[in-house]
Amino acid sequence: MKVTVLLRNDHDALKGLFNKFKKPGTRNQNGRKDLFDEIRREIAIHSQMELEIFYPALSGTASTRARELVSTAEREHRSIEKLLQELSGMNPSDKDFETKMAHLMDEVLRHIAMEEEGIFDEARKNLPEFRLEELGLEMEDRRRILVTLAA
Image (cartoon, rainbow, N blue to C red; front, top):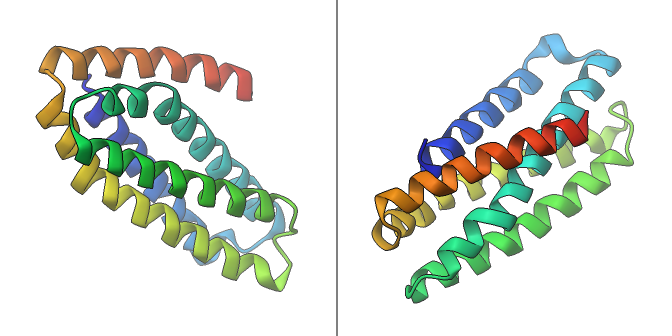
């Protein structure tokens, strides 16, 4: 599977988790905490795969635009990680939790849009098809390891 397809699937799964979090049925504390933990885990695994495999491959191309986009994406990852850390230290019943969670979801959705509209296009322009496939396979392997470590 091409790396862009794999990442888009991850993005779709994360959007599904966000929608589930927004539903009124997830208002009890344990349900919200469990769902937040799942969101945090998915973001952490996804981010680590991008930072270790996808971004370095794209930064290694001749494209200045690709390097600029990767630099922006890496800054966004740090901002998202900071929000995740803040949320991890909060109780879902805290009044600021809802606001901070909404901010996290906005940041992640903005990041997803930037990747899908900018970075994926640069990847398709600057990496041959076989390399997109190789990166996808590398990321699938890395995901299996990270999921095992997160369990």
